[in-house]
Image (cartoon, rainbow, N blue to C red; front, side, top):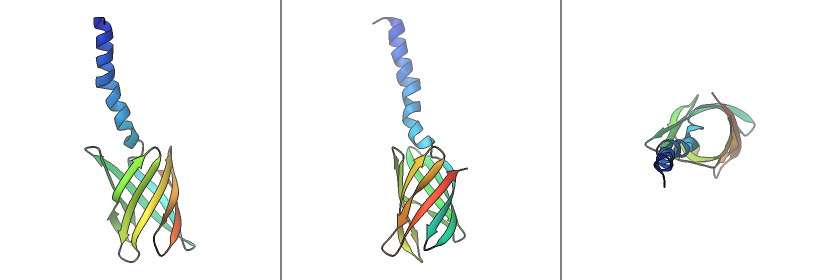
Length: 120
């Protein structure tokens, strides 16, 4: 292999590969203005998604305060996590993210609802 070809391969692994690997979470990080629909009521919520050392984390902020997302996972456009609220118990979220739009479902043993939102 020529020296130029070797340098090109090294360049690809050093500079291009990390960008591709980091881009999966990068597109969802930040704040999302959402509306949660449950039992005919609309509840505004802001989801804030962060990443530290490759680990996804986040919080949900509403009129009831701020709570941390439990076990957030994102892969191939699907975001899942849980939130614990004393009044409602543990709530499971199953969301699809496409570009700057988020939609999906939430629920637990007691109720079901939907979520829609956009990235700030």
